[in-house]
Image (cartoon, rainbow, N blue to C red; front, side, top):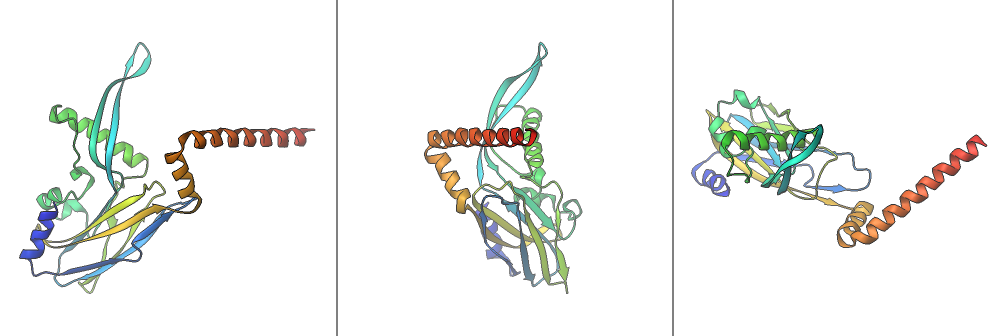
Length: 239
């Protein structure tokens, strides 16, 4: 889809300028999410849509069935290029833009997100698996089912807040901005936000990835010390 955006730049004289208050988010211990100011200017009237897509990764999905009173895994599918995060904001609800084809091509809106996997399944069954992934992402606050609002002033200046929950994974986040008029994309801009772990969070993550045995040992040791401390505290209080 890079070609699609590039083609817009070549064949359109319309201009959209957009920027972010900060193009980097640091994740540390106790990180509770972040909000970044997104703002810009357009040289033609229209509706603005911005989507934030997290790093794409493979996701394993297990289907559970109840047999003899027990829930067991009956099937397993692997989907690829699944965004780990998704957020969209616009000047009006997406279903009021009358731009279904443009939104589909640019994967704007949760229902238009595409990822590969389970192509051997019938379309209806594959959509069932895909819906399971999306619903799980929404429950874990990685996808936002509600659209954010972009405010336009003087028919040219726009701004909104990009919301990021605490459930961020590190990597490069793609920010696509579209200017839509009469159902067509007349201008586009692409930006990036880098999300990375820092401080103790980074050290713990590196230890878990590079030395899983030591990380597990320290976790058990910490749990034992914590349990002993709680036990002693309760014993002394009740003494």
